Structures are given as structure tokens and as C-alpha cells.
Image (cartoon, rainbow, N blue to C red; front, side, top):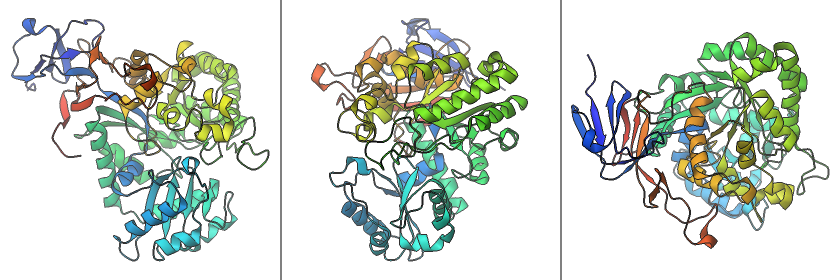
Amino acid sequence: MTNPSILYRGGVLHCPADPSATALLVRDGRIAWLGADADAPAADRVVELGGALVTPAFVDAHVHATDTGLALSGLDLSGTDSAGSVCEAVAAFAATLPADAVVLGHGWDESTWSDRALPDAAALDRAAGGRKVYLSQASIHSALVSAALLAACPDAAAAAGYDPSGWLRRDAHHVVRAAAFASVTRTQRVAAQRRALEHAASLGIAAVHECGGPGISDEEDFTGLLAISGAGVPEVYGYWGELLGAARARELGAVGAGGDLFADGALGSRTAHVSAAYLDGEPGACGHGYVTVEQVRDHLLDCAAHGLQGGFHAIGDAAIGTVLDGFAQAARKVGVDRLRAARHRVEHAEIMSKRLIAGFVEYGIVASMQPAFDRLWGGAGRMYESRLGLDRSLESNPMGAMHGVGVALAFGSDSPVTPLDPWGSVRAAAAHHNPAQRMSVRAAFAAHTRGGWRAVHLDNEGVLALGAPATFAVWDTPAGVERGLPVLQAEDPEARGADDPTPLPVCRATVLRGDVIYQEGTST
């Protein structure tokens, strides 16, 4: 028995093959017809679009669903601006919890504070009334913890990255993170995952790439998320980031053995592996590389043996150089063509050079990037300048240069590192702080839609075309529409840029393979 056919008419369709199209017919999960309203065939049901914009739905190519859901319902520290305001927020939130609960918070970023002194473990103890406290920095590569949590994790003191002040990085951070999240019940995790996916759907996102792995999410968390994929929520494509873990990734249902397989850390915590020292850290400190060239090579060969896509989290240019050297060694074993066919990925790819970009082109590497990183931390007076200096900061996140030479791009948020915000990401890519790195709205939109599908080898998705999956979003566009895409830039040149106040489109509905997974007016 076929499903009822649905005609969506009276809209503005982003359909480059037929720019005059105003309607589409959905039958059995696919687009069965496209064209003008006057020529529309009969359908079992008609949806009047009232001039709304219809586009392919977004794909977020890098998320952490459980963390995102917990952040949406937990302690949000993104608005804090001092050690005192962090402690005040902790105290107010802790007062709502049982005495034995763990305080989980996320999002503080001292690089934006006028006084960058952090609250220590004792101060967090006092604020939380003696409760265990875990507060992840915006990058999720370091955390502030209370004395109570330190006492509950004695192994952390012997791990790399430990600091008795309570600001933990590297291995010590992984120890306390595991202990803190052990307090979250399985029921709470499932609820958080569903909340994150429902929120994504409300923003016109129909698919996400979950980046899990040891130290990020446990196996039950990962497989539990995959189990609800597409069940009234966006589809989930999982990446399991375990070195030489291709067999295990396949067993867990992952599409790739990569994602957050760490070649280095993050700029926010000064653990990204860079070739020139940080300007605001310990003298000569260049962060940390977590894998060797040989390990990269062997991981790629393991992926090839299992017919699986691989990849690495690599932010700093030194880490990316290590990854590319590993690609070169793997190519000597299996050939460049086989590496290119796999579409291996690098997540973030923030500090690049012409040589590194050329390596991405040579090996067909997909760059899974987050335009919001530049919007939040790029430009003068922001975190990248503090860490790297202005010139190096303006060379970061070179999406325009990479797109210009044919690097395959897939855009995402790294939520909860930055919020799920696809149109905001499109605008951020088009309004990069460095004008030389800007992309057109059309190219940025493609990277956030079709680019995400291509990154998981689904090349026929992410377009409005006859026979394609009926996966699209319907938008109110206060900014207006030009040639099927919103006008995202202010008319006043001085108002343009990453902080442009021009309103962004608002999602009215999200459709995944013909099924409505979000309808305006429903709660998320």
C-alpha cells in the first residue's frame, strides 16, 4: 500500500534545475514532480506554502547529541564573563538539585573575559554546597571541577593535564569527565538525545553526524542514539573515533572510524598542536599531538581492510601535518586512488597552509568544518588573536580558499561547542572575518546540505530534484529571497559581517524522506 501523495504548492523553491518551480509532489518518500502551481498534478493532500521558501534540509556534519541535549536542559555558562559570574550561576543551579547530585555545566570561555582568572576547585565547592561540579569549557577539551570531584577521582592526579587548581586538560580531563557523566542515568541520556534531535529538526536539520568514541561517549550511548535515528527525528550517521577501531566501529553501526579520533586538542584549551608557540601560554608551548604518523598510517590501512571511511580530529597545523604524513605513508601501501575513494575526513581543520590544503586535494579528504568558530573566536580582539596573533588568526578556518581549490566541505556546529544554527553558519562562512576567506551564500549552503550527504557517500541527496528523497525544509524568510536563497547580508555595508543583525529564516516545517519531523507550533 502506497502512502498518500502530498502536493506542496505556492512556494519559492531552491531548485537550480528549475528556478521557476513553485510546487513539488511527494509520493512514497520521494519527489515525484516539480514545477509551476498551474501544472501541478492531483494529490491526496495539498499543503499551501503561502510564499514560503523550500530548500533541501540541512545536515549538521559534527555533533555530540547527548552533550547537546544535556546543555539544552542544564547549566549554560556561555553568558558568564568572570569567575564570580560562573560561581553565581553554579550556586543558583545547584540550589535546584538534590544534595548528592553532580552539577554539570558547559560553555564558559575565559578568552572573552576582561579578567581571565578562573574559579578554583575550592570556590566551586563553596558555590555548589559541597557537590561535585564539572564545567566544560566551550571547546569541551578542558573543564573546571570542584574539590569534591577531584577527591572522587584520585587517578586524575597522576594523569597528563592535571592541575590542583581544578582546571584539567588532556588525560586528566577525560578521567573526571567519565566520572561526572557516570551520574547521568540511561533514561536521562535518552531524553537528552531525543531533545537534541528534536531541536535540530526545529532548525531545518534532517540529518546529523554523531562523533563518538572512547572518552567522548560510551558504546551504549552511541548505539542508543543510532537506534532512534529517523524515528520522528533527524537521521543519525555515527562515527566512532577509536584508533585501529574499524572493526569495532562497524560492529557498533558506525559509518566511519573517525570523527573525534584526536590528533590533537583545541585552541581554547591551548592543546591544539600548532607549529608556532601560543602567544598567551607557557613560553614555547605548542599544544599536544596525540597520534604519530605511523598510527595515522595504520589506522587508514585498518579502515581500508574493513572497507570503512576513516578520519581524525585535527585543528592545529602541526597535527594536520602529522595526519597528512600518515596519508602519504598509507598511499604507498594502498594507492592514492583508494584513499580518495574512501573520502576520509578531517574534523575542524582550522589552522591550514597552502601545503596542507594541497594535501586535502591530493587525497580527496573531506573537511568537516564549523563556520561558527570564526564567527565566535576569529577577528581582532577575540580568542584566536589572543592565542595566535592577529595575522595567524585571520588565516584560520580558510573555508573560502579550500572551496576555491576543490576541497570537499561539510559544515556543522560541533554542538554543544557552538549552538545548532545552520543559517547562522551559512552567514558566518559568507562573512568570514578575513574577506579573502569568504564564500558565496550558495556555496556555503551547499556545504551545509549536499556536502553533509556526500560526506557519508549519499551523493544523490541534498537537492530538490525529480526522484530525489523528499527531504526538505520550509522557511519564513524575513530577510527576503533572491534566486531561491535568503538574502543574508544587511544592505548597510558597515552592518555586514559575522555579527550582521539581518534576521535569519525561521523554520516552519522539516520533512525527512516524506515524513514531517517538525511542524511549526510544536514543542522542542
